[in-house]
Image (cartoon, rainbow, N blue to C red; front, side, top):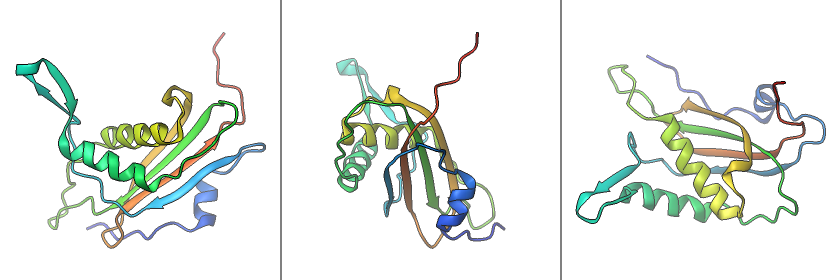
Length: 154
């Protein structure tokens, strides 16, 4: 059985993803929402030839945006996004619950970018992880400037 992890301290988070010189933290929040169980984000409506977000995903995205404050970022820059999902990721028998991290990441990233008025193509670096925490469910989001020039291959 997996032990319960409490929310990491500020010091622990700093060790994990330290700020580089000249990085600006635009947003660092904890949102007390449990993401819906999503293994697929979209539903296909064949009669209308349409693909759309599933209703539970659309509702979650709308609720998530209510927690994200509007930001005014003067000049578009490249961003680093860190997402931590806190929840109970195991069944009582110890097996891992199916939950697609990439789907969670996409919905959270879209909600964030829509709310702050920035193109998600400007997110250059991402870190997403699940944290086993059955007593405290929620989402931690940290959006920072990327201080360095993007990696290039010549």
